[in-house]
Length: 467
Image (tube, rainbow, N blue to C red; front, side, top):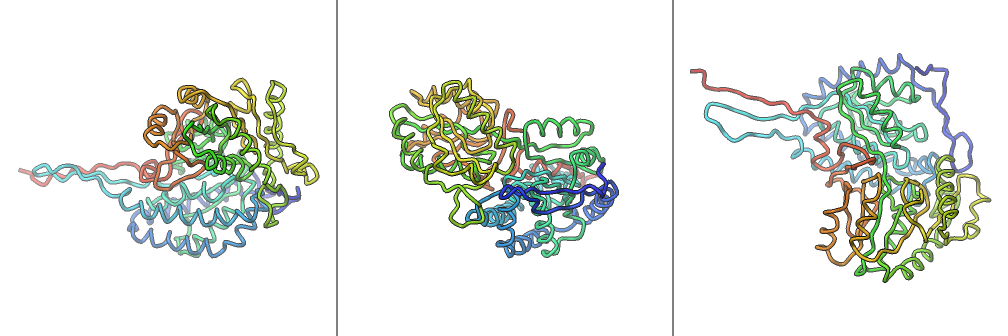
């Protein structure tokens, strides 16, 4: 267990300096917070849903009122270009309001067909305390996927944010406090890996929502298996796109470049591999390269910068290893890194790369890269594209680019994935479920369905006639 003498240090990818420091919470801190959460949750459980919605709506106003400061902090903590950082603040507000609108229907009682002399219904009971462990790449959006529906359902929240983005936990707490959320219902902890494991083991925790790597998900699952609690695991992807012969090529290029390289490719549902009908392969690749070369790599606090540094040096090393392994096996890189002047900026600043002559023997087409690299392959038809899209240990999202919705649905029906897009990618709609299969994880967030894992069914079987 971490002691109070240990400190969390955030190294900013902008300049490799320590941006902020915080003490880690220790065992006493954890016990005090969980004790407080248990007590206040019992009261919150009996607070009407409409009153809960009022508080969470006020949270949106409190949070967005700090847009400028939150945006700047995002850039310094994880390298998001400042021109894009406000989008996460606005997106967090939009997603929260969407879940508020869904709450009435998602949490209403389920009434059974009438039976003479009986009243039968199922209530959705809150679980108790939900432990949320989000990732750093979209630190607010990932967190609210669980935090907001869990609170609306009557739970208490303990948030352990990434050690790269601890200020996000503090900003959320400030906004909930300003909104009037009862003290103890939303708390955060700055924890080491060891302390995080102890919280998962604590009998007062009723559900764990983890977003991170596959290896991290396995660790959480092993620890949680010591207890009978629910888990939500969102573990990333190797998301494919298929550009059909009938696609609008210019539109596909514009959106797929953004889907591959926004946030320096550090997105669970970012585009990491593209399959293009052979009729359009050359023109697609040429257009893709031309548009990618328009990115401006640099210090993300500069408004003109469109591509910032990667957040972690380990991520830089992984992407470079994928590129090197592919090139040594015959892949062809199409971008000249000297064009982006990345090496002079610092070790976190990795230029984008586009690879052709790739195949599924290469790591760049099979393993999650989580960075600014994409491989592009030609395909002869839908069948070949479908086979390649499914040839992956991941299954988070997939996109089909076509002018024919019926064909898109037919292809989507056979893709092994949690979400299928047509003419869109790298996007979460709060009204649709967010779920992955295979190594992309388990469980479901967002949409009406997402409330289900944060509640338990409780049946009422009431007999009115006693004779």
